[in-house]
Length: 199
DNA sequence: AATTTGATGTTCT
DNA sequence: GAACATCAAATTA
Image (cartoon, rainbow, N blue to C red; front, side):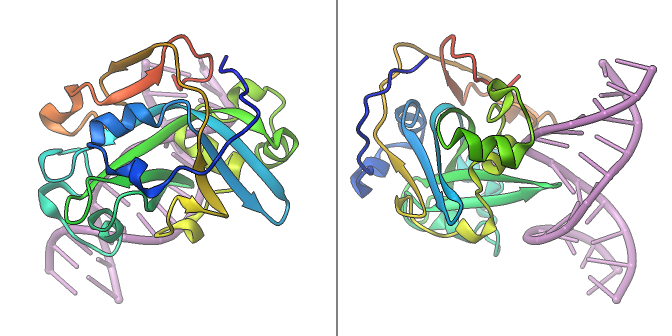
């Protein structure tokens, strides 16, 4: 379990200026906050995946494919990239800087505040399974396509300081089995032994 | 304009 | 462990 530091300030724009693979690890332990008219819900990030643009067959921006959907990945770091998969919304942090279409998928968070709200949205009693997947956490926190293209540095959706994890593990990414060699790249990071990891 | 395809989650066996 | 739900964006024509 991550320790509650009881104080969380919004991460500055400079935070997102580090290389994607470094940022993916830095994001672990940070607090993801979403404010809505119903209330505030938040959780510590415990699992991320990096998508490395042109070089990465699994990335939407592979080969510099620039479309309406991937447009925000070509913009500044720290923007919000939301994507609808089947019936679920997935959340990414844009990185790499201008004209480098890289992004980091937030795969799992550890519930911190707004537990009642998450429970209501997910309709689940088991709070350990509330946010342990990319589609689950976005539903629990109330993240939608309305957040697409907004910066992570201001409400209603933003990132704040949390607690630095003791240990970080890495391994192959999940759900991209048809992406050729890219499926074996160890670009998935998670907080070692945290109980809120997907799978 | 029509068709294909998932960076998933739930449920059933 | 496999089926399927369900939809918007991308691709094709």
